[in-house]
Image 1: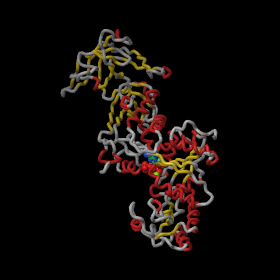
Image 2 (image 1 turned 180 degrees about the vertical axis):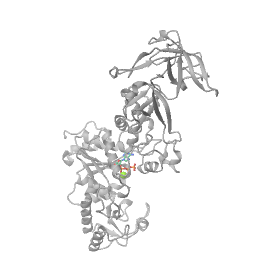
Image 3 (image 1 turned 90 degrees about the horizontal axis):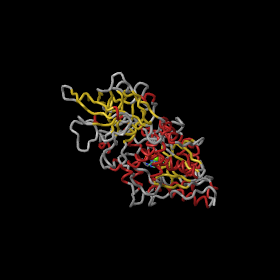
Image 4 (image 1 turned 135 degrees about the vertical axis):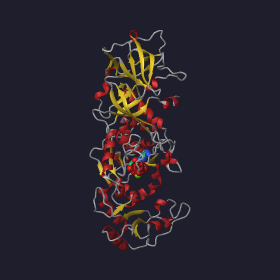
Length: 559
Ligand code: ATP
Ligand code: MG
């Protein structure tokens, strides 16, 4: 047994690799790749594939390539190439020098196509896309041979060379593999290998007007890079015979093994670049990195940590069975991480002024509150306490619902890390809106337990005179439907109209003055927030709600 086997195997793919290593297949090498098409930003589904490919390479002391599968220049852009690299680095993976583009193999792919033609295994076909579809047959009926299927090798070579030389219109011809028009697997019914497309390519410029198809390119790219295990999602299972067929026809190449696993689906979420692009293009969200988007850029801006995403991918596991994971599981992984690492702070979203009438106007005390209840190493924060403070408007009720433990007229409540106050008077404007509470505090209660006093509620507060004015953005699920990806109708009709709520004029404790973009905090009693990296400036901080405090998933799944 090779000493690089990993025991015990953590999932079926590692089991397969262990067996391969025992047989010394691939001379004991493990080499994977993550192959994004640069036609959009990466999403949380891609994170599953990234974690799988990079972590597998790491576990078996192998390598993982980053390869851009760039065979569709019309949909691809450099902006996407850059964002993809950024996201993978952010997740914490490093491809070192191993950055490749399928487009850099275009010359070799062309030579292999010539080789196939010379062997009589490929031919130039003049059927239009529509005709080809009609000839292809159905799941129950075999396909029909193209009239060009028996074209001579010489003629095929001539036409293919002229396709490359831009002698024909886009779509006039395709190069097709000659396999089996009666195959029960439609992918094997003479699939297209090349099509003519006058399209500028972000890597090769205008050098090519014919572009190879994904199925033809992917297997050869894997082989050229000496990949050992080509991990892809289940929808490629039916393409595996073609993957193997192409490599079997071609000389002097390694033959990687394609292994399929179930893609990640999450409820209340769409995970398809096409749909995500539509949301961006139609202005239904504010860009690919809108914090409501399941893109890695959006999640980053929202405040997700790379370790939470990686942990989530571990929890989901790698299987052959498609399923939909609950978004609560993702949020659980996130809270778990944020609870340990986020300093605490107080922020009032809807400020209500409180004047503590028996507290001297010229007095200020410095309240010391721990930055973290369980981690003393984070130190303390200082919050000046004086006569005027703000509390959350929703922490006061004139007519409290049953079980309300916060402030009511004549009632008492403890201010977090400070005094117990009592509400003596409620001031209102001409319209009956509450404008201010006049309270009194009991000096004996500072730091002490409010013994014999039955003060159940603890609320957060900020000092009025040196609070920071901040903007807070609350987010909810982007879709109000559990399975927006599975609806018959238009998934866009199920966008949650309340997925973004903006609160300007929020008041935050002064210790946040030095918060930097992407810093994360737990706003006590509210949730986890992070400083928006795009819209914050030194004088005006914007906080994004990352996730609320309540964790239903943990409770629901307790055994
Ligand atoms: P989408 O379906 O969102 O358009 P894609 O498959 O077209 O994604 P690629 O850029 O081709 O996007 O994906 C790169 C890799 O990520 C592929 O190996 C693909 O199988 C994998 N991948 C994409 N979506 C998921 C997902 N939801 N779960 C797991 N892996 C995924
Ligand atoms: Mg794809």
